[in-house]
Image 1: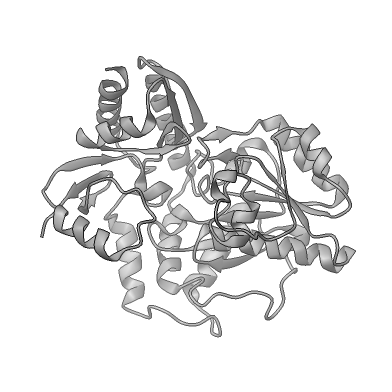
Image 2: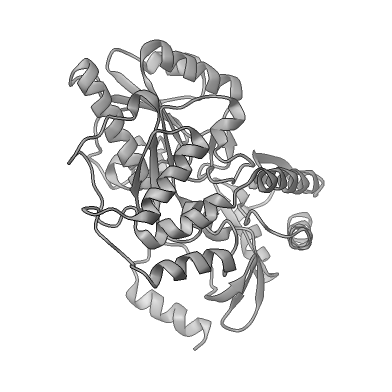
Length: 388
């Protein structure tokens, strides 16, 4: 078995929706991966912010294997200890009151949309259902979350979209122009990962929060990519000292297993009742056991380390010739250069470094426990590729 056989089989049988790099990964440990020919790669993508403790993590594996030895799935008609334990952890760490579990970030955002609209329907009537999102956002690939995504590039082919969304620029004048008597929520990412790691202005976020509180408009923060320690905070909204009404998360939550969560705070806590929402696999016991292992290990010490590593990356990246700007927070990093991001990613791959791209930028989302020597090796390759 070699990479070329796998690539050939993939092209023959799998819908070609991904622009894959010509590599088939076989195994790894931590932030080092190996293909079927034995070539080593430093992983600065972590499965797009999913494998937050790298691959083949022993503590995570132990939790997952122990649950596999007990029961791998039960429907949500019955109670599950891993699910209850994880919900408790999330609520205790964030101040949320209730959690709904799905399988992905898109499902978590679908739940948030439903929660916001039901809250407003009950309190104000059926016409108050409009949700404002911020241009350059990305909220998922279902029809509803694509409708919420304020990027035209994702809207091609899939009309008609779900009604009830407006798109504002990331400034208060634009937001206020969109708000009216039909507005039930404002949904945003504090850092827009899929459009180039754009960090929203902190003062703007505080003004949005103030407006939401004044008008009883729900503030939904999408932490699918920014959450679970990625930015050096458990959830990135903490960096801005704002309090959302609904927070969604996924990606790194279960450390490599599919799991999404929609956290409901304060006045949204009791919005759902029996039959309002559901998911066959949401809160799967194995995924929740893995997530309990992950979440319990995101300590203040780990988060301080993420901030330190992020600053180290940023300081050294800004010194590289042809780098114009470095954006992001913690270990969520965007690099704008004078060169093609896709070409840089391809050349890095050849040299044994896995990076991502987004809107013309090189994007780094390494494991939170990436080692200093691995960061230095990654920086060396980035310098060779970008500065040449």
